[in-house]
Image (cartoon, rainbow, N blue to C red):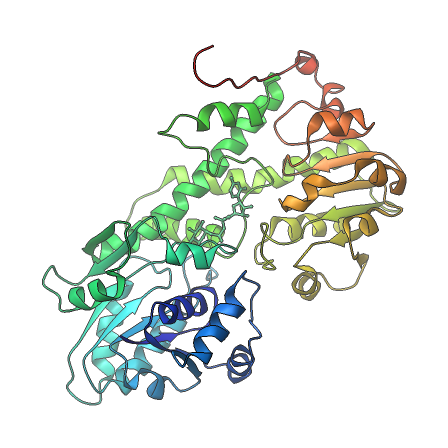
Length: 459
Ligand code: UGA
């Protein structure tokens, strides 16, 4: 099948590479000539495990090419995917200007029947407007159909998610759309369910899925606040909840809140969609509020230890990416946290396994030292903060860290470390939603010990 993919960001580039790997002929299209040249050399604009290899393999096999010309790129294609960004606008809604611009250009260039599929995350009604814009801009009478095929790829795992999705959602204009056969051919080999529905339902499935996962995170973070006050341990509570198959263990990890280029913008956009439909989605307001508060409440722990003024203090910060396995710092809570520390007068020493370069563009050079390792960051610092959930931070050599810090204090914003190990190593330990030695001092409720034993089968 001949496919054009417009936009070579996360969704477009991964989509183009995987479609090509399935044996299709794919053209990736982007207006950024420098970016296109780099991709062709195997230099990916993003850090995504396995992506460079997959792109080069399919370029070499002659199934994947790139161009800056939308007209040339879509000429032979049977399916055209729109994968451009939909950033957050000033009023919280999705900014659809890139989608509209691409729809206009497709209309002007369309010269044979094609299925135009939107993969970008777009609010309800967008695909209908795409149809109108293409129609308005046609230079000649030519038939086409639109479809909505939202993606559910997680950064860091997107190739696997694209190859083995839990489900594929596709919205069509009507149950007898010609596009249905085309999409069936594209996804025929997938074993997971294909949810076929109308355009508007498909658009909402995407937002509802992200908003639900964000709700799960805010929920466990609030349970964590309650645990802290009541003297329980949120990690044990999340474990006990997650074993219920109706709840499931995923997205129940407490922390500093959700970040990234998707959840914050999508929850906000869904809220805007609801107000546009004259409905106040109260739960989503709470989800967003809790997410902001979560970071502030953790910051309070730093202030409770050092006082309001951090001038003269140096804080080591581990993790800048918005989550592990990515170099993406967009809407990263870790970056916001570093800014808060600097705002209170602290100097920061930062380390991230992948995101130092991207973070540098954001954080600049004032009162910040970019370090080569966790241990380099800890050198001479007055405390260590863990801000992103990189697996490798779990294995920190605590004795070594202790010799490097001026005071043995750890603020673990992701509950990543083994609490007993940290405390036995002689640290004052702050975490999220669990009673640690640092928190017991401040709250007598916490003197009773939480514990958990998980046994299998009959006991
Ligand atoms: C998210 C969704 O998981 C994907 O299904 C979706 O396709 C994508 O958005 C998108 O709309 O494009 P992603 O933004 O890559 O993917 O990141 P997630 O793995 O979902 O994590 C989002 C944030 O939640 C991160 O900041 C992470 O640290 C935080 N998180 C996640 C928690 O705080 N606790 C958890 O238990 C899980």
